[in-house]
Length: 144
Image 1 (tube, rainbow, N blue to C red):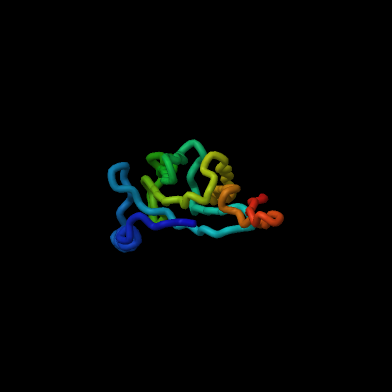
Image 2 (tube, rainbow, N blue to C red; image 1 turned 30 degrees about the vertical axis):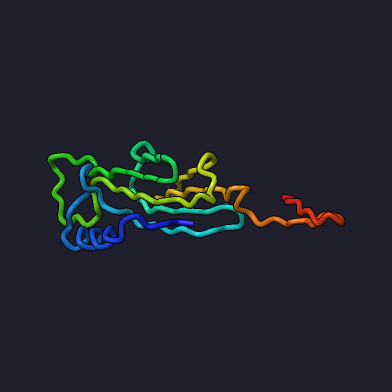
């Protein structure tokens, strides 16, 4: 159901993790995701801990799904001295090419416990259907 668009994107993500660089609007970091089919729905889950819903942007153009998010540093005062900072900050983005068999008009999005979950129904035309064979003329009818 998914088609990867950039085979080198995972390499960029690993290099960013090792170098400790944050994502920017011009070169965002990649967010981890899982994708699976659950019945007649395709589910994509993105890890975005610490990101507010207002900082998440979901867009679908044709069959290209784009998710962008930004995690900003927590407000700090002059009395706070940072000892360790390992949580990645900055801009995160992921583009996923969706198959034609998915109904992109009816995508549902939920955000809970730092996980953005998108549910995309399988299009009716992609579901299996029985083909009935007509009477003596042998014409076939599609039922579904």
